[in-house]
Image (tube, rainbow, N blue to C red):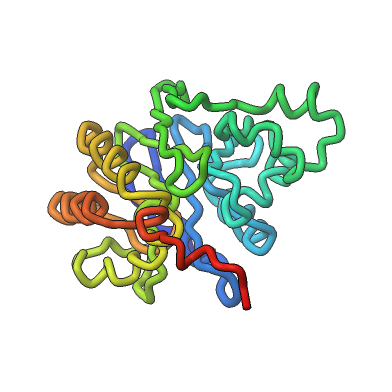
Length: 261
């Protein structure tokens, strides 16, 4: 019997949230992909690039037919997030969910020639303030996460499971198995720090995001790289860490802008 692909983050009578963390190995940064299934309908999150596409397609088909895929969600424009988005549109009837800021750039990821009449019909362009979305007889929440790190960045919250899919926020370049929850934030932060200091725009935006997330009260925060946060104390420690982090433009001065000799 074929082994079940992925790691089940949450399961109820009608909802499944599945993490795929090791479909490909070798060159390239480790990246997670996700599948939410509600009442027999699927939503694929952060589908990734060309290297992962064949294995991810095979994994998705294990759980549901591709014609039951209703949405493909990309939090931002990076190739490890969205490079194969066009291929998923080609093989399914899914609608692509992306920040409206990136909607005019999406043809570069697709083979669709008639952009205006074809892609726009299959694109949900999320406004800057986010929105609520009906999926599988219930709502999902699309949250603003701009400048963390993309100028047009969105997170997705699944209320039944309490999972916040946080994209690059909380991402780590860690040797830890990405299917495991983080249990030591002080150790794990060593694998997050360099990434966040370079890729996140500034501490102010991290603090705004952390405040919003505290209001949401997620039971799990699951990034697109590395392990996830599932314990209330670990989640609180993670938010505290973000709120005190200097990053991005906070760290810049004139020495970073010199004419090369």
